Length: 346
Image 1 (cartoon, rainbow, N blue to C red):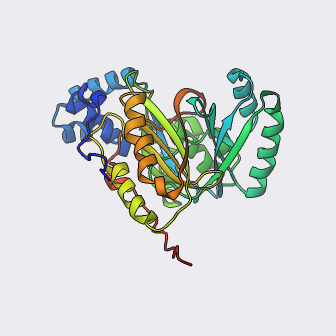
Image 2: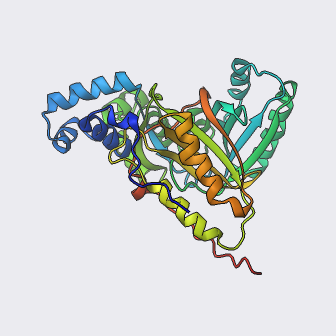
């Protein structure tokens, strides 16, 4: 079977200069970098770096944030929920329903095989179960077909968390204050922390370092608005693994890890194994819906055909709650895998 060409190029990446793409990559991987250091890495003057950064912030709607460690924050229950409605939903009404709880983090409307994706995080399975049932009742008038799956881990990417969830956590108030500020703007300085939290400068710096030492933050990163010339395609997959499944999976992993050098937006933003209604989820950025289908959906259908793959896919339409992690990272460096040691003959 022919593999995805690892040299595949996305047209939207070619429209932007290498300096622009390098700057977005740097900010995606280290958003607290100073202007001076940024200028040095890019080989430009400090003034040029500052002016170009201001331009990119406006052009791409950049939001600086933190990639948080949900395990360290004791957020043990993480679910992706695929929803199909029988009747046309009022997404404004649904957004108001979702905002009443701190559990839903990201909600997007979708055009395709389903109507909405929800990412939900809670402190316990019991807390999630209670919210799950209450949401199904609240959305009953829309005839919501609710298909939840638990996230095993994320091989690639993250979902931004809402500060409303951080407010609910059990941790020292000074840590929580700093964490919320960094989540809202990861470039917040010690001086700004000190002023807004009413702390001495040294106290703010001390608590910042304690937050990092506790492992609450995986990295300081950024997200941006979706560029107008890309398609965000999501898909859920369900498998019936047979002999040769791991070989097919290893081929698929090569596709997830291949990308344009210094891409404007990473080809794959999220890859996550699941347990429940579906076994796998991805969110990817492509030139068009046709390209997404050919290089993602159809490719995986062909690759896993003998493993009884069942797929549901759709194009991201609008963000209803939270924000999507649209950014540029080195996917080959970042992608991690679990080897499933399963003897399928037993």
